Image (cartoon, rainbow, N blue to C red):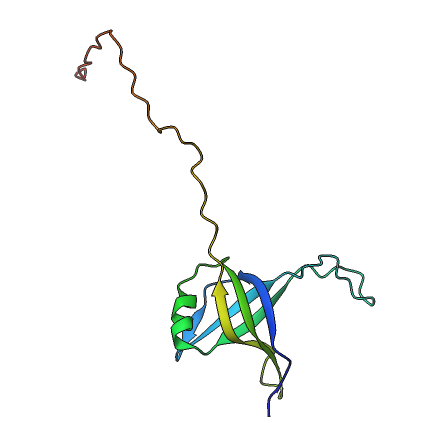
Length: 131
């Protein structure tokens, strides 16, 4: 019997490309808490980020997830499956995944990249000099 937590939604980045195995996508989510100064009382260092192993069983979404590059921003919903034996690992069982598309950037400038300038001076063709 598997023990799991309540459903949760997390946002993070794809740590590396997802791996497809039998229609499931296995990936790692780089999660950074909103409050960067999360410091447990018994520890003397701050928790800045964590990497969560994840599994997604939806074959269509798994194919799409496998196409995303590392660093892609994701919002995932699912639950933590807690280890029930010493052979199983903690993992986030993902029910839904949304890839956040980057905002389209406006062009840097509205001027053309090249500007033609008409000159009245004639230019001379340079002939290659024989060696």
